Length: 148
Image 1 (tube, rainbow, N blue to C red):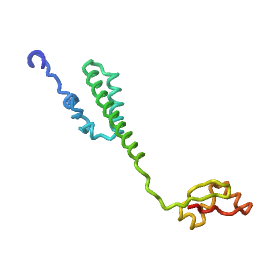
Image 2: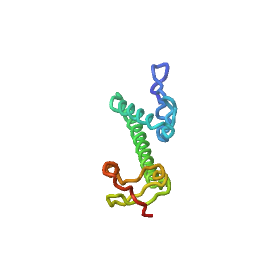
Image 3: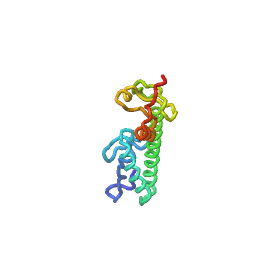
């Protein structure tokens, strides 16, 4: 605690609210938002501030405190990036919905391809590519044939 008596010029150690929730990663300072409830941008900004204070603090105990916060915030960002990668992987694995029935077609150039039935009804999908479509228009070639 403090040294000496109050009447003899002793002092009281100041309460540091930044230490209160340090080991649970729930700060009781600033806006009192637990790290787990902060947005990712908020965590990044808090990490930047903690790194700046860790490098410029005048007392060793303050330096240790800010280094602890840097470690906590780094762990939180790393866990969030792992979660984001896992979500992206599951979305990539999800099967894309079928957008419509398709016909197998054979272009005048001999290439096999698939075209949607709805597109064929509208007059599209009669060639395998834009190049073949322009050749078909210029030279009067027959449209693609339905194989299946």
